[in-house]
Amino acid sequence: MNENPVLQAIYSRRSVREFTEESVDEKQILEIIKAGMWAPSGLNNQPWRFAIVKDPDLKSQFEPLTKYSRIIKGANVLIPVFIDKDAMYHPVKDHQAIGACLENMLLAAHSLGLGAVWLGEIIKSDEAIRKLLGLGDNLELMAVIALGHPARRDQKSRRKDMEELIVFKG
Image 1 (cartoon, rainbow, N blue to C red):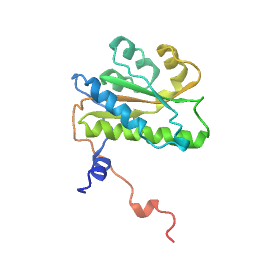
Image 2 (image 1 turned 90 degrees about the vertical axis):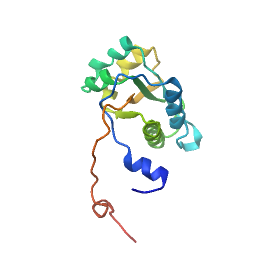
Image 3 (image 1 turned 90 degrees about the horizontal axis):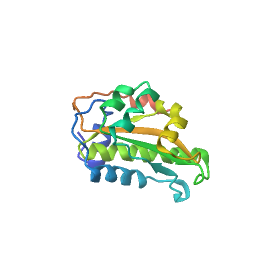
Image 4 (image 1 turned 45 degrees about the vertical axis):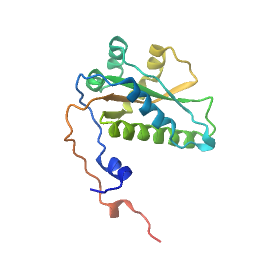
C-alpha cells in the first residue's frame, strides 16, 4: 500500500452502505462539511450548501424518496448537498465543483473512521426534499451523503486497467 497518506486514503476509501447504530459526533459532521467547503470552485464562488438531517422522524421521510431506502434507514446522519443556483456562474464548472466537494466529504468521513456513501439517484426527489426541509427553489439537490459508523470494513472494489482508460500518450 502506498505510504503517502492522501493516496492511501483515496485507494482505501469505499462506499459504505451498512452502518451500526452508534451515533456520529457533531464535531465529526462539521469537520466533514468543512472538508467539502475546501473543495476548489471556479472564481472561488463556493456554490455548495449543506443540510444536516439527524432527526429519526425527518430522516424516515427520505426513505420513500429513493430506491435506496435501506441505506437511508441505516444511516445515522444524512447530509443533503445542494447547489445554490444564485451563486453559480458556469453550470459545468459549478457542477464539477460539487463533485469535488462530495469527494472531499467522503474522504474526510473515511479519514475519521466513519463510513459514507454518495447517493445520486435521490436527486429525482429534489423538490420533495426541498419541501421537507423548507428550502427555496434557488437550491438544487446534487446528492445525499449517508453517514455513520461502518457495520463492516471488508468492502472490495476493482478498477479497470489503466491502459484501458488512457486514450492518448504523447
